[in-house]
Length: 266
Image (tube, rainbow, N blue to C red; front, side, top):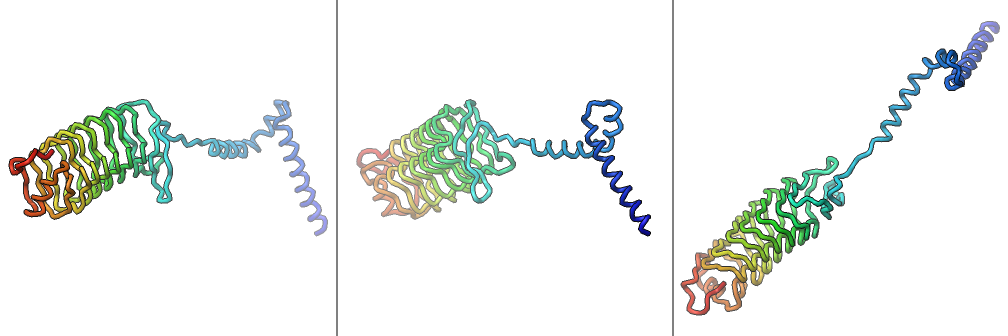
C-alpha cells in the first residue's frame, strides 16, 4: 500500500513539474517546444482575453449634452453643447430616460426648431429662452412649463397639451403669438406669461384658479372668454381694471372690446 501511495505522489509531482516546464516554454522562443506547450494554455489565454475585452468596454455619453442623473434614475438635461440649430432631444441617454429639461439648458443656442420627446415631463426656467423658434410641439407628457421657458422667440402659435397644470411667469413673453390654446388642465397662469404678443382673443378655461398680473399685457385682444370663476388681476390686460370690474360683476362669459367706454384694453 505504501508503494502505491508513493507512486501516486511521484506521478503527481512529475505531472506538476512537466506543466511548469511547458508553461515556461510557451514563450521560450523554441518553435518545437512552443508547439508542444501551446495546446495546454490556449484555452486559458482565450479566457483571459475575453475578460480583458469586457474590461475595455467604454460607454460613450451623448457628446451634445451635459446632464445630471437624478435619484429617481432619470436624466435632467443641463446644457446643450452641440452646434445644430434644428435639434431633436433624445428620449434617453445610455438607456436612462430624459424626463426634464433643466434651467437655461437651451438658452441662447440660436435654435430654429426643436423636437421634445414624450419622456419629458417638465420644462425648466428659461430652458429655450432667446432662440429663433417659430413653432413648438409640447408633448402630452409635460406637466409644468417653467418661468421664461419660451421667452423671446418667434413663436406664432402654441397648443398647450392637456397634461400641463402650470404655466410659469413670462413663459411665452416676447413672441409673435396670434393664437394659443390653454387646456382645461391648467390651474395657474403666471405673471406676464403671454405678455407682448399678437393675440386678438383668448379663452381661459374653468380649471384656472389663478392668473398673474399683466398675464396678457401688450397684445391686441378684442375678446376674452372666461369659463370659470378664478381670480382675475386688475391689470390682466392693462392697468385700468375695466375687465376685472366687468368680470367681477358678471362672472364667466365672453367680454369684447365694444363693451368699454374708456380706452381700449389690450
